[in-house]
Length: 259
Figure 1 (cartoon, one colour):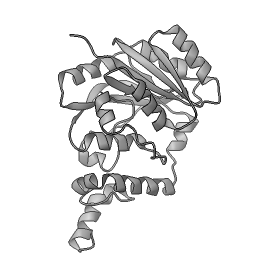
Figure 2: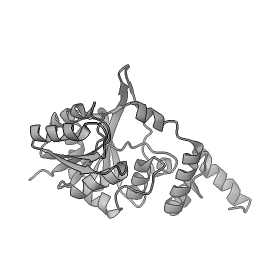
Figure 3: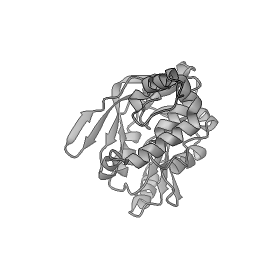
Figure 4: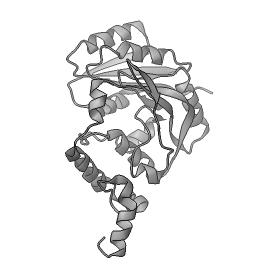
């Protein structure tokens, strides 16, 4: 039986210092066949030149160059051009273990009810690393927060069916919304029990952890407008600013006749 082609889609914006390490982690993968699509998202450093150099070095790499349009546009562009049946988004500064793709594909190929496979992970920088404490998956938990990082594996057809990553979600956490729309109407999720993903902490990623209340409110408004049916089912009403209190608060309001 022919093994499915896996397309690793790598958006890259000013990650010249890390891109080669990311690519080399993919090329060390125990799984074949693979292709790696590097989408240069209007970088102002020499990311494009490094990507083109890597494409000459590794036959599995293709490079797409686009004006700066944001990570969702870059991911969607790569997914559209991908020839693989299975997609792995991997940002241009992160790393994977050699066995991650193989173990994930094994699950996806044998269990058609599974839509998404991810793994344990660590966060790292020049000072060291620490395990990423990820919550176990359930739809009720997904309604309140995301526990699946963007570098999970899924079938391309499922991504296309939900319209890919939402390009108008410019206030952050676009991967959370992507998983909601892919999984809210069915499909299982498997987390592999080994560390297969290494998330690099940079100045850019650290800034993401301090998003403003304004962005958070805009994000919650966006999610409620787009997935109100999902939150009604899982939280008995809309997602609230204090996300963990959404369901009890909604139940109280419903009891008082205010919802």
